[in-house]
Image (cartoon, rainbow, N blue to C red; front, top):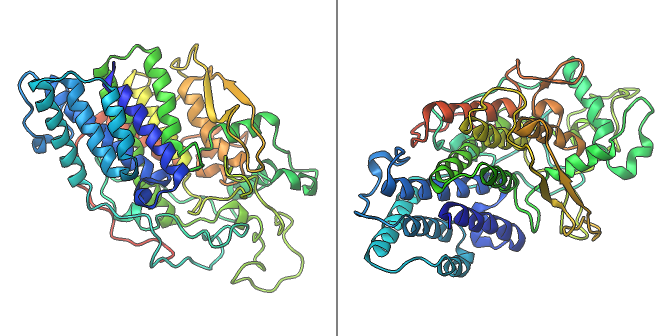
Amino acid sequence: MDPIMYWNEVALEADRVTHTTGDPTEAGARGPLGSSRALAITHLAMHDAFFGIVGGQEPYLGNRLPTPPTGGDVAAAVAGAARTTLSALYPAQRDHFAARHLAAGLVDGKHAAESHDYGRRVAGKLLALRRGDPGHGDEGYVPSLAPEHHREDPDNPGQGFYAPFHGARSACFAVSVRHRLDGPPRPGDRAYRRALRQIRGKGIAAHLTGTLPDRFPQRTPTETGIGLFWAYDGAKGLGTPPRLFNQIVRRVARARNNDPAANARLFALVNTAMADGGILCWTEKYRHDLWRPVVGIREHDSALGPTGQGGTELDPDTDIGWLPSGAPNTNNVGQKNRTPNFPAYPSGHATFGAAALQTVRQFYGRGGHGPDDLADGLEFVSDELNGISVDNTGTVRPRLARRFPGGLWQMIEENGRSRVYLGVHWVFDAFAVDDEDRIDLGPNVGGVRLGLAVADDLATHGLHAATAAGPAEEPAGS
């Protein structure tokens, strides 16, 4: 048994379960930031427990690493590290972790007991290191009422704001610097107008497509499938994007015949990259504080919104009744689809996807920006479209099996674009595009640029506990 793959599966199930049950004791592990943080802590603990015994990689904890036992048992050490971190992060599932621990069939004896205790101590060090992380609440946060700033989804009033202070107040896990982005296009910019017209047609709710003027191209069946395939918006039975990207990495790791050492390193890098990508993305989100399309399209004209000034005829790019297809409320019958409760720019999906998948590309020596062969011969099925999950009306979605001839690079770009097809992100939240709507990584714009920067940073500098504190500035709306 590969202990890393075993406990990775347990961790991904924990993410799925906590987003299904909603147990309040596990609130800190929910949402994209909670998921990425929990997975990073768990995999870094497994990484240091593994390599503390077998050697071959510098420990993430450095000189904080406990002294490993002589002749240690790797599987026992990894189990001790994984079960300890998961039990702390998902306390309502402790009995399940105990059962999975027993099912792992660890060998009894002195070496196993000492190694298990070693893994527990490594986990304790990791948990202590991250004990001061801020929460995800919005107490004390007041949104701006000015045009272009993020406010609650008008179709889901009272949704609140997810983690407005978390990014700015969090220390990163491993990046060498806190990567930043330039600001997004704003109303009046050509790129903004083009993005608005694109999403108005491609992202509109299906029942409103008849209201679109003829000049707006509509979403194709393929684009609808793409939007759903990558969603994982904290839905029941699914969890969050970090779970999806781990599922993809598992397929690639198996196809590459990874041994446990390779998986210990790969999954620690991938999940640390997503955790740091999340911290930096949320820092940028609340620094730029850009409105989502559901507000930006409905209030595009300056006469609209809380601070609107009187006008006559509305700008034709305004649609006061526009609604998005929405982040799908999968397996939650009777509940509306919605726009996520945090600012648009940059896209968290784009950041997590680029951070995770570029890390895999770097790991296998495909670190450039272009197609790769890492998905050759592989088929991928998303839990959003697995023939089991249901939409919010209770209808079972069909199973959709997909191939990616452009490899993980194709996934990075498609994942970024997928949010346009749901109507919850402008295209520049993922990346800049040229006049032909092709990805342009020249400008320092969007979540893909941010995720790539994080992945390339870790590929260059490795896994070392970062000491950089969050910036002093507070979110724009506070």
